[in-house]
Length: 96
Image (tube, rainbow, N blue to C red; front, side, top):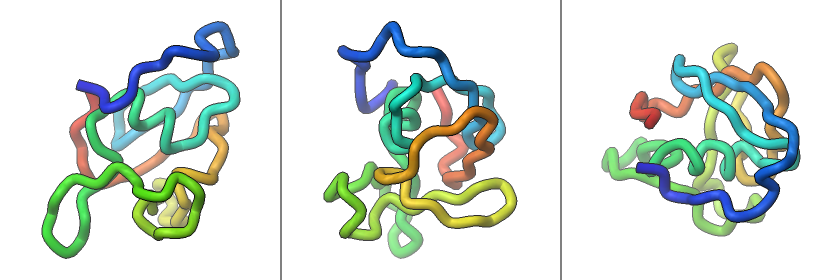
């Protein structure tokens, strides 16, 4: 079940991206964080305990929302705009 539920920007253009190998859709104006959490219950799992994480500060200061591209580039999900065709890897592999 998704952690977030879209209540605004429902009419913005759809942006296709891939999340942990699964095709997904977000909306124009979404950050990676909002697009991902509209699809799944957590953003990633912490490397220390394996517990689910969903971002913390929502403004790029806490380092809790790191994800990666398929090529290995690390991105802050809360401050990175969703772009068409992004291939994002979180390690959770539980896309709804």
